[in-house]
Length: 123
Image 1: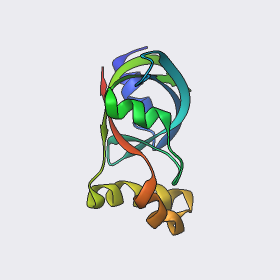
Image 2 (image 1 turned 45 degrees about the vertical axis):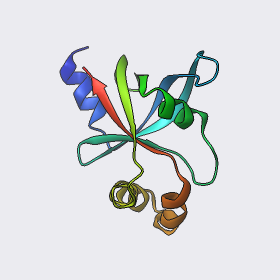
Image 3 (image 1 turned 135 degrees about the horizontal axis):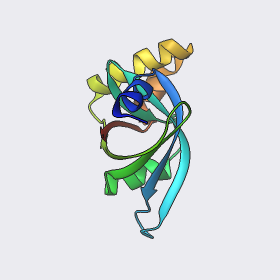
Image 4 (image 1 turned 135 degrees about the vertical axis):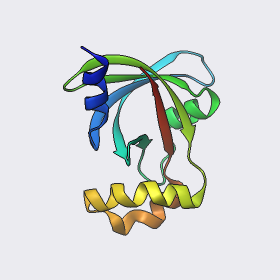
């Protein structure tokens, strides 16, 4: 698999991936399945409103994690998470995601309490 194959896979608007984070209390590795979103050429991971997420708490303590591509390309990539906390930036990311999925009616709840991180990948 080439860097071009990985870049092509990462350019998809929405895909299922796995991430491995380091536990903030235990230091143990935790691997879970999440959705990776590409909005305007930038990568993001988010979750549903109102429910705390261990992956998000782990990333807030340790930004480094592993992104596991598993659909068209299989690759384990070093990545860094940056929590998106600015309201205007959160809106600019969540609005197109919710419009695409037909859930724009959830935007206020998602803005208030959904975890949201930008993902920067090392190729």
